[in-house]
Image (cartoon, rainbow, N blue to C red; front, side, top):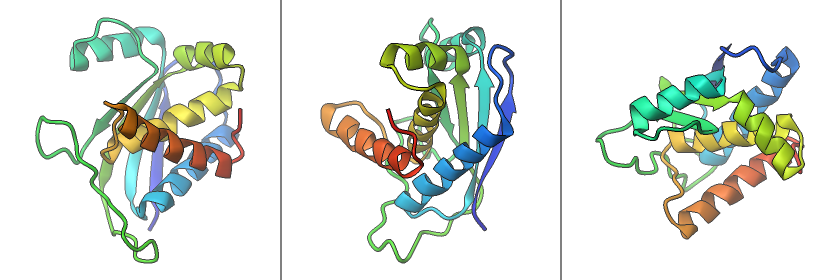
Length: 165
């Protein structure tokens, strides 16, 4: 088995090519390998700012658009999710089957951010996807230490895939 990506494009402002979906599938495999995950499903939806704004308002109580939302399927409580998978021995990955969760990305917001940060839209979408994936398995960035951990993991995966700044 392997990690599987199911995706949909629910916006019309930016074309999402099959080639780029291949890049995202590679990112999913790389991020999964780094965390010792070999199986599971991730649903990815590309939306516009209006859609993500409504989701952010409905599910987080924040009345503005955001770049990425993640909805983990493995949450045990309403509290913040703990790290589900901690790999002690990378040669012995943790078996997992089932839905990890949903990642929703605003392509409009990603495009603006890519221009602001001076890198490609593909790099920004890749960053948001890996960021969302890490949230699905329990990582967060509530403080400087946890943000540094996520940033290091995200950048390592993006570097491996050749999505540099």
